[in-house]
Image (tube, rainbow, N blue to C red; front, side, top):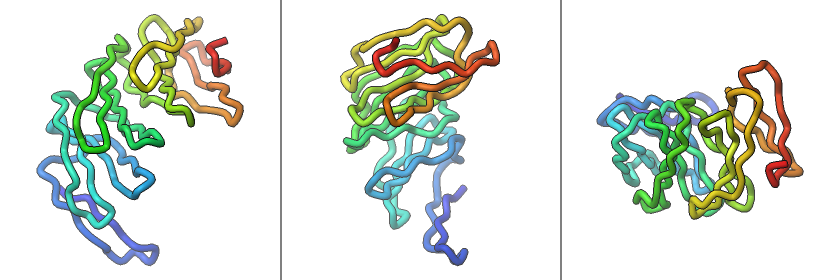
Length: 171
C-alpha cells in the first residue's frame, strides 16, 4: 500500500510505503504535512518529502478526512461516535462523545471553534478545549458536513431535504 506524490507534469516525486491501506481522504496542513487515517485504526502524519512524521493509534476507524486547526491540532471523527483531538506532535489530547453515528467531519472556524453534528439532530459548537460552546437542535437529523460562511454562518443539510443556516452563536 502506498501514497504517492506527483509534480504538475505527472512525474513521481516520492512514494510513502504504508503498513496499512488508507480509508479516509487525506488532509494537508499549512506546513505541507499530509494526514490520513488507516485501516489499522491509526492516524498517520507524512512529511512533505514523503517520510513518516508520526502515527497515533486511536483504536477506531475513521472514513472522513481529518480536520486541521490553525494551530495544527488534528480532529478526527470516528465510527465509534467519538471526536479525537491529536496535537501536532501526534499525541492524543482528548476525546468527545457525540453519540452520532454519522461519519461527518468537523468544521473549524478561525477561532478554533469546532462545529459538528451530534445526537438528537443537533449541531454543536465546541471550544478548542472540548468544552461545549453551544448546541442547537434541528427539526431533522443532520446529514451533511457543516459549511462555514465568511460571516460565520453555518450551512448544512438535514434528512428533511432542507438546507439550514445557523448563526455563529447558535441562533
